[in-house]
Amino acid sequence: MLADLWAPWCHTCLSMQALVLTEAQVPELAQVVRLAIDTERSENEQFLQRYPAVVWPTFYLIDPETRRVRGRWLGGASPEQLGQWLREASGGSAGEAEAVLRQADEQAAQRQLPEAEASYRDALTKPELEPAQRNRALVALVSTLLKQKKFSECLQLARDEAAQLPPSVSAVDFSASALSCADGAADPTQARAARLAAEAVLARDCSTRAPGVSADDQADACDNLRGARVALGELAGATRAAEQALAVIDAACVGAAPELQAIYDWHRSSTLVYLGRSQQAITLLEERERALPNSYNPPH
Image (cartoon, rainbow, N blue to C red):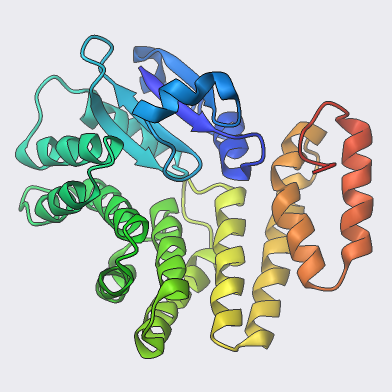
C-alpha cells in the first residue's frame, strides 16, 4: 500500500497529485494500492498516530499484512525518483543498504528518532549505497536531526553534504531543512556557513530546472533561496530570487486550466506580497475563488 499523506493547503502535495502520481508518469503505481490521507481530517487521526506526517507530503510504503513500513519518502519527487524508490522499497529481497534504510524508516515512523538517526547514518556508510538511496537517506537524516532540534549536527551535515547533492527535488528539500536548522542554531557563525552552503545549491536549482523537476519544485527552490538571502542580509539577491520564482510560475501557468494554475497560487501570492505587490495577489486570489468556488485555498 502506498499512503500519500497530504493537505489541501500543501502546494507540493497538489503538484505531486496532478503531475506525478499517475500510472502514465510512474508505471510502478500499478503494483500498489494507493491511499490518499488528508491530514486535516479528524477521521484520519488514528492512521496518523501510526504513520505520522513528517513533512508535506510524506509517503509511506506499507506491507498490507504486517503493516510495517517498507519505505518512507519525504517531500516531492520526480517521476523517476518515485518509480525507483517504489521498486527498491517494494522488492522482496533487499541489499544491506536498502535493509538499513527500511529499518530507519520504520524507526522514524515509530518516532524512535535517535535510533532512526543512527540507522540513516549507518546506511550512508554502506559501500553499495546507490546515489538515489544516498539522496533519500540524506533528506531523511537532516529531517530527523531537525525534529530532534540537533541544530549543530544538522548544520554540520549541511556544510558537508549540500554541495554533493545533484540538481533534484532532494537537493531543494535537504537545503530547506538545513535553513530551518540555521534558524534554530545558537552559533551564528555555524548558521551562516550552512546558509551559504544552502544558498549555492538553491541558486543553482532556482536558475535551471533539472530533468524531472516540476515548476513547483523549481519555484520552491527560488522561495527558499529568497529566505536564505534575507537571512544573510542579501536583500537585492532576495528580490532577484522572488522575481525568478514569478517567472517560473508564469511560464508554468500559460494555457493551463485553473485547477493546475492553482497549484502555484501559494508561491505566487506570497512572492507578490514580498515584492510589495499585494493588491495583485488579492486580485489573483479573488479571480481564483470565482473560478474554483469549492477550493480551500483562495479564501484562506
